[in-house]
Structure formats: C-alpha cells, structure tokens
Length: 255
Ligand code: NDP
Image 1 (cartoon, rainbow, N blue to C red):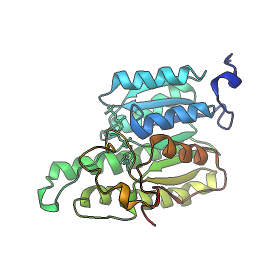
Image 2: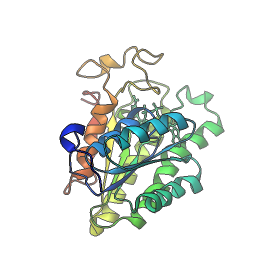
Image 3: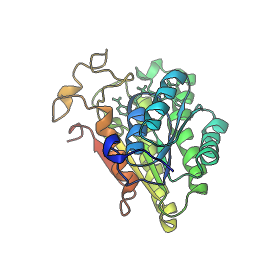
Image 4: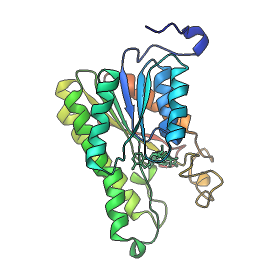
C-alpha cells in the first residue's frame, strides 16, 4: 500500500493498479512516458541496453511518485530478450496491462550506402522486436490491455532523401498496429500507434546535425518535447474505445 499523498506528488489515478512496460525507457520519449504513466498511477518497468544509470534514475523518479518500478536490461533486437522483458515485467510487478513499444533506432543515409547489417539491425529492433513483444504481451493481457507503439512522422510523410530504411521500419508498424487491433479487439485489448514529429531527444537533438529545417516542416514551427508525446501515450493507455488508429504528435508535420 502506498502512503504517498497524491496531493503532494501530482499523481492521478487513471492507471491505478495497472502495470506498464516501456521499452527503451532510460532516455528521451521512453523515459518521459514511463514517468508520465507512473504519474497516472501505474507501476512501470523500463528496458535499456547501455544506459543503466539513466534507467536507474527513471526508476528512482517513479518510486518518488509512490509507484513501483524496475529497470531491465533487454535488447529489443534480440528475440529472447524482447520476449523475456515482457515475462520479467509480469513476474516482478504482478502482471502486464500496458505495453509501450518505444525502443527504436534510426540509420539514415543514401540507399546505396546502407549495409546489410544496418537493414537487419533496424528491422530487428524497430519491427521484429515490436512484433515479438506485442505477441508476448497479448498472451498475458486480459480485457483492458493496451499496446501502444511509437512510430514516426516518417511513416506518414518522408520529406527528403535518406530515410528509406527508417521509414520502411516505421511504416511496417502501422500494419502491425491495425492487425493487432483486429486480432485482439475481441479480447478487449486495444492497439494504437503514435507518430512523433521532430522531438528534442538524444536521437534528434533540436540543435543537432539533422535539426535544420525540421522545425520549419511542422505547422507549429518548432520541435516537440518528449513529454508532449508521453501525454498522448497516457491518454491511449486509459482510453477504452480507441483502437487501430494513428496519432500524429508532430506539430503538424503531416499537414
Ligand atoms: P533516444 O535515442 O533518445 O532514446 C532511445 C531509448 O531507447 C533509450 O532509452 C535507449 O536505451 C533505448 N534503446 C535503444 N536501442 C534499444 C534496443 N535495441 N533495445 C532496447 N532499448 C533500446 O530516442 P527517442 O526518445 O528520440 O526515440 C524513441 C522512439 O521514438 C524511437 O522509436 C524513435 O524511432 C521514435 N521517434 C523519435 C523521434 C524524434 O524526433 N526523437 C521522431 C519520431 C519517432 P539505452 O539507454 O540503452 O541507449
């Protein structure tokens, strides 16, 4: 039983009693999402590969909100680890209600410069890992289960060259999400995809090499924040009658 006073922690109760797993939750959009889901009342597991210290910091931030949290080292590109993280979450936190498929990598560059290893790695992390984690999660979820996948504005609109591999991986997730919605709907489990636009993170810093021009491609003329994506994920984690849909949190990048 938590003794933390919600009036002092700023937490809510929409996800009270729920357990969430956020892949790639040590930094960026995943870290913001993990904390946001905890703020809504969920206990949360996060996965990471290299950032143990950062993941531990996310755990401490969640525990400070009066929720339980655990950091799991699990490479989404490794089939056993992608599936294993789902089982470890359920065993450690007592079930699984919300899966956020956030872990993703980008390899950008001219088509002819992409090595076979790049193709395999990006598809393994961004697509196969999501497929396997979603299947493993669905097997454990009951009515009210939620699968929320982080896609990309590049799945909807590719504004220039160099994005073939990344866009391929992210657009595959649209089909996966719709098919999951159809397959799992009868069990009361929803599946949705969120497409971030340019979001200021380590992957795409607002002052980084790929930043120039990105803000101008949005209707709002700016990068978004990880918290702005996290708030849509939190909405979907609680929404009952929304499934199979794409949510652009992209400042109007696709407009
Ligand atoms: P970051 O690179 O800032 O953070 C990535 C997170 O994922 C880290 O916690 C990292 O952990 C983890 N991670 C990386 N590879 C793996 C892996 N193989 N298995 C498990 N975890 C992994 O990325 P963002 O927060 O920017 O991106 C999050 C998601 O949003 C991605 O799917 C990305 O494609 C998508 N996105 C981002 C946009 C942006 O502009 N930022 C735009 C559109 C989509 P570790 O600590 O081990 O490095």
